[in-house]
Image 1: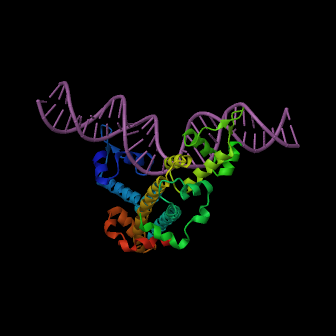
Image 2: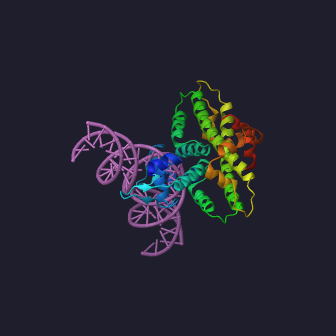
Length: 148
Length: 148
DNA sequence: TTACTCCTTCCCACCGTGGCAAGGTCAAGC
DNA sequence: GCTTGACCTTGCCACGGTGGGAAGGAGTAA
């Protein structure tokens, strides 16, 4: 199987397959006489694994660890879980950050007259830096995500 | 005021000040006889504006628009609000994506025996791609963010 | 003068992805 | 055989935003 077919079968672009090879995430593919990369079903399986892990937001570095565990029959499921939960923590931290931004912005926007006058609490906040005082109280924070 | 002082006063690193100048986000600073960049209080104010906008997650491109509106006395507060709410939409979309990832991962992790045995639903999912079937039902989705 | 801090420009790195260009290969059709 | 078109190869450039560091000039204080 050539790279194009492996790409179509795995959902990983040819660019990224070459990139993963170059950076050592996957082993170098065998080559045909003409120098074309040749892939097996097993290689495609690995690529699909990578693709799904990317879809779940794992970084390439984390995927390296996941692949190692995947290929290790002696692995402990505990180790996988730790890795996954660390990733969940990172995601949660980012979500919390973004929710704080959303809350602040929505609060500012609510106080905006939203018309053709120039006065605007959003710009005022950016210019004067009051948003420590202005941010929504914590009990409103989790209402925000429902909107997006 | 030299770049170091402007940086300290605004919270924007000297690296980034030069970068913003180079890319045209801020106007080129005047120079001293020796070629040092010279900043006024007004410049620092602009840098603070940029800094706060970055803290709220606006991209540099969006900040360009915000600065234009800020400098335009004819602006309509409506236009600012539109910009801000577009940004909120983007943030919400990303939050939703990440929450979906979190929900899937937590669901998989819950079913993990979390011990020294190799069998692991997380790796199994990545290898076999069941997570369409496995993801938490939507009504559980928003429980996730509370944990992080 | 020396020593130290600050400034200048320039290049490199990250991460993951895409685009483009120049050239080789392969299979199908004429 | 030859042409065409799809596919492959490598290599370079770009994005966004940030930091690191080198090499050299400028300012300041002892």
